[in-house]
Length: 302
Length: 161
Image (tube, rainbow over all chains, first blue to last red):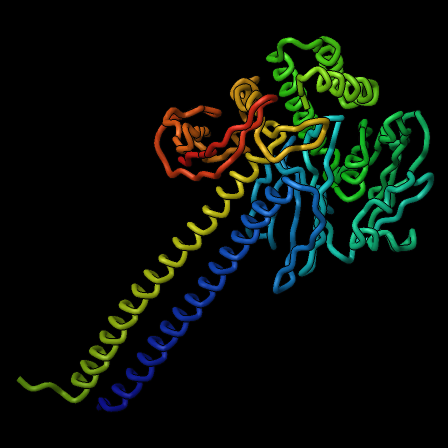
């Protein structure tokens, strides 16, 4: 003999539990999916707006800070030659392409310091962008060039108030014409420098990339020194700096070729000969003087 | 025809479930339409910011900016504008560099504004700076153009794919 009522009650309970579980799981899944979606949107927006901010910052010489409502993780990673990618909180990536942004590879915090510096050879090649979090510490050792820290905005000067043992990055300066020593630890760089007649620094910078490969590269101007200090991307963005240098060289060679009625030969040959970064210090003065002479004749190049 | 009590209760539960599911579907459709609208609006805002930023960047690009004695002036260089096409197409690497920089930009050109007898006359012919192809949304910004002996006013336009 079967108890039909008993079966009916059991069926209702099983039905309620299965239906309830399914509906509950649906809502949990929906909420999780949407939270993820908004996380992605926020990250995308932050990376897009940061890229726009970099483009805007590039246009002038500024020092500012960038604040967020909550703690943000930013990564500036080199992807191949001449390309840098900004990743916001592991989620959204944005190729920076034309913007030369120098920063530690990973930044954490809700406020970041930003400044720009123009790279002139003597005509302007580009503005470099420097970014750091407030907790980052740099230690400069050896023959530190005069004015290198004094010329920085106050927010950036504070980053150098530290002991050697607490520093995230150590920069060893040697006032010498010889090439720098490229046997360095991972968080160190060596800079050998001299000063030219225009009071600009030039020389070589040595370091090690994230894979442990040593590099030694020529530099000209304090903008490039700051790029090596603040940026973990100096070596991988070097080809992009070279590309920008060559572009501006071509821009002015083209401009000179369209000038008529002035004695432009000297400036043309000086700019033609200045075809690599290590030749800038040889031709800087000559280009500057010849440009001023052309302006005097009524023909402006830069 | 008679229904047993159990069948009736299952029927009522099914009907409740059906109404619940219909309400759920209607609210989901409504929610996603709203969310889609917001996403479109956000996308447009981001794109507007991006292309206004790009216009600013173009105006301040050392490749186009006028400078005198090493100091940048607040205008574009007429000679550099004329040569920009040659510079961007100099090599494959160079083309790739500018394609990356300019992204979705189809074309860049300047409409020169000419003042004749005190009347402003916008020149209809496009002074092409970067290749013109196809159609698209146009973003513009007023600019001044400097040459050694004269200054002109104009409108820098970019056309987006």
